Image 1: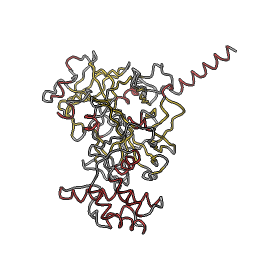
Image 2: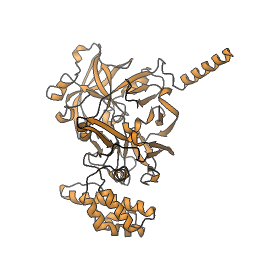
Image 3: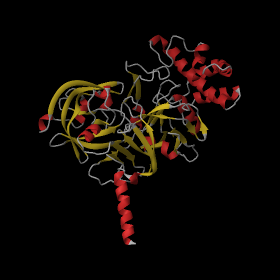
Image 4: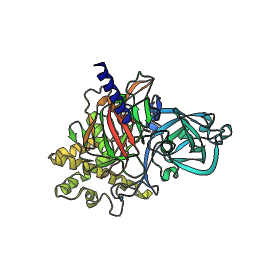
Amino acid sequence: MRIKILLAAVLIWDLTCGLGFNVYADNMVRIELKKQVLDLSNINDARIYVKDLRGSNRNLASSSDDEQIIYLKNYRDVQYFADIGIGSPPQHFIVVFDTGSSNLWVPSSRCFFSIACYLRSRYKSRQSNTYTKIGKSCKIPFGAGSVRGFFSQDDTKVGSAVIKQQVFTEVTREGYFTFLRAKFDGVLGLGFQGSDSRNVTPLWQNMMLQKIISKSVFSFWLNRDPTSGIAGEILFGGMDWTHFRGIHTFVPVANNGYWEIEIGDFFIGNNSTGLCKDGCPAIVDTGISFIAGPSTILAQINHAIGAEGIVSSQCKKVVSSFGTPIWERLIQGLHPDKVCQKIGVCPYNQTLGVSHEESQKQTSGLCNFCEMVVFWIQVEIRKERSKELALRYADQLCEKLPNPGGKSYINCDVFSLPHITFTIGNKSFPLSPDQYVIRVDDIQGVHCLSGFTALHVHPRRPLWVLGDAFLRAYHTVFDFGNLQIGFAESA
């Protein structure tokens, strides 16, 4: 009997090793994450920017399938960090492990004219025995601006592994207000090699090339236990079976330079919003705390969870002045994309949702609100609601639009709030109220915020960003060998 038990144990051990679950294997690299406490100032200052390759806001509805987005953020709301070393002997830096970008960059000792550089660790090439000079200048898009520096090459220590001669950026110019209050030194990008990384080979790819890891995956886990000393973990080369329950649902990654997947319908409670029933792009991003989505849906979420937004007079103006014509055109069967043009709110020669000239700002604003109202009324028509109820609902949603910073406050009594559910790979991934509500403590007490923030793009083909509020609930595997991402319930 003992022999059978021993053989079974050996078999299970062998299977878990073969699947990449052996957490003690030599060909894996474990990174323990540390967590900082968010404050309201950083939360309200956090921003996400979406641009096309020419630098203007992207119209997702009219863009061709092969057009790429430039997705940027200012990292003001990041919570999770880890320590790395660059050079020999290692010079230590606190960095954000970020799947939303591709570059590794840290401040340089040659950063003389940015005050922020003097407040954090700086790389000193003269103190490293393994430094290799490149010297080519570069500019890395960052938030609304950029950081500037030059390429260098040196050994980089991540966890217990040393990646030989990793190319990185020594930053010599940082934005004053962007970095002055930052709690980190730099960023370690886990995105794909592409135009934003100047075709520099990412660190995780060099891990494979140098045979530091044998499996072309890394997994990401955030600890939901606030009393634990370990805030989370990144495991290069495999996954730790103690960090998840069940099996992972894998979906393919879009081939556009980001860890982008397609999600399906989005539910508030048991009610479908219908917005993504035909599919919406979603970037899986370890470098933001919130879940970002279109204002169209955030207003519906805010209405359902009692979040406080800012009353938009322009939005209400659209409902009162154009609500009936919108209703009539939709009932007549006019395509929703053409309604706002047909009733004269959106000019025919203007790209929907985009203002190209200063003189068009007011018109563009009304156009954006009109597109939202069209969607809301269309949803109510599908529910067979009357015109009066549909217009009243749209008017109420106008009051729940997110504030300019995109954040919304809610009551901390979360037990009565509905679940919010994403559909990924034809499977439901619900978030309970305690998972999507973010609590912030300060000297004035406890504040509760919705874990959803606004991302202003075209409402017909909205972009989502699944940040830490989603990743805390679901253990995530980034499989760059098979270009897929897997999600399983986090343990």
